[in-house]
Image (cartoon, rainbow, N blue to C red; front, side, top):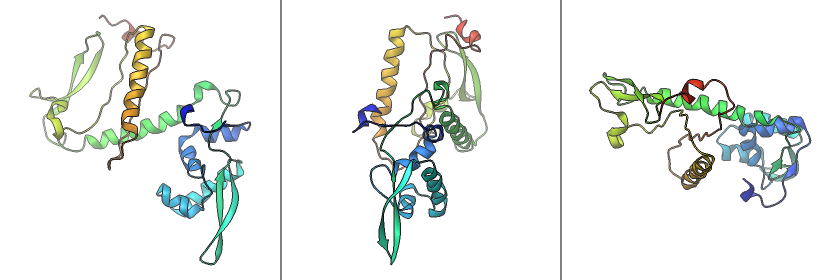
Length: 226
């Protein structure tokens, strides 16, 4: 994100503002007003929502001091208020929000959307046909996982273009610090390679990598034989 900053970000000193900015849904709404003053109806068209729905949220952003009226434009004989964000980018210090909470709500919201999307995928071909299920399997590192397959041994991933597009799985990797940094860079590069593409179908991509050496609950995975 730092590469996109054209000026020094506005420092947030208000906890309410910090909590709104931590929520990516609110941040996306605010971003529509970041580079120019917009009327609510115009912004609603950009976002693909109703004017009434957006107006209620604009009022909340305005009360929080993240949005303000920057002027007016005449349309159909009446003045339309133009709203502008307080800044294009914001800096929220950890003194306002505990660092361990940053992104937690966004991850929870998107994981829920992901689960819904995966659930609907399993209602479509080829999974709407008899014979599909999952098989328990062992990975090369010794951990166990589940693989989607047909009872005759065919894997859904081997169906080529006939297979639905989805990837799901949590894996405990045993890496050196150097390997972990290398993987982090590769994941970022992979995301960057596709992030600018403009296809017609929306896909939800989640990228997660964290050091679990001080986290309880994965002892059975840490102890898996290589």
